[in-house]
Amino acid sequence: MLKKQYNRYPHSGSCYFNNFIKMHDPDAIIEDELKKYKATIAKSHQPNIKMNIKWHDEQLYMMFVLRYS
Image 1: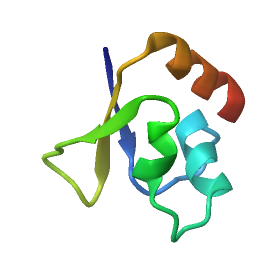
Image 2: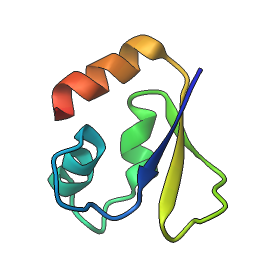
Image 3: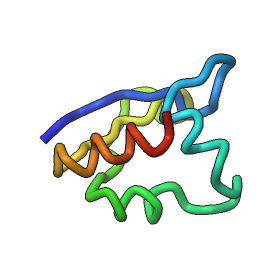
Image 4: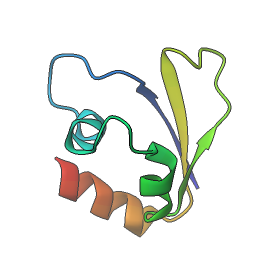
């Protein structure tokens, strides 16, 4: 299992997770989209700023990175 931390709101620059957020409807539930990649949102100490994501399948994580890079 991989654990990664991302900014909740995209900043300037092109991180693959920022691209993922920008490509989806702002009203869409991010958690539902992450389920396709066997990923879940974990508890965060700064929930308004940071998102902790647990990737349960390393191959699907790599597919996610390649798709949104």
